[in-house]
Image (cartoon, rainbow, N blue to C red; front, side, top):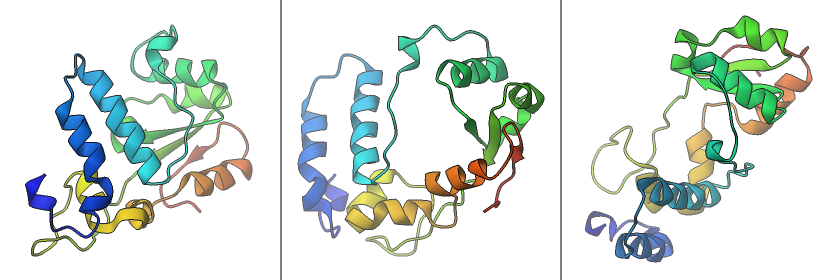
Amino acid sequence: MGAYQKAPFFNRYADFFEDVYSREWTHLSLLDEHILKYLLDAFGIKVKWVRASDYEFQGKGSDLVLDMCLHLKAGAYVFGTLGRDYARIEDFAREGVAVYFQDYRHPSYRQLWGEFVSHLSAVDLLFNHGPVSGEILMEGNLTKADLCAVTERRPSGEILKSGVA
């Protein structure tokens, strides 16, 4: 973390990360969950948190994702770009689950040292921009509110394409 000590918001978040590094973690998944929940909060991203291990989802690939949607009563599912390679969208449409393929556009932002380097960690963004990091993270991408507004205006099961507003 020494590389970030001069970052504008380092002091605001350093205690959390010092605590993380000082603990003995017995499972990587617990460390991941701890950091992810912190970052979601820091970015102002409010989502219902569930663990797949708390359910008995069935299937693989597209079938597994659809089973999760049905058990959790999801009206829409956002796949990453590579979801196009395996998602059977007709199955989702048949079950009334709208599908969206997110083509995430990585934002450019001011960094501490030199020219912008894309695809660094979320911590880089947080230490450099603090409370506005969530807004920067979503620049040029549909937000949850945008996606909800789009899915409310369309029939259930319709496929949503990137860039639809």
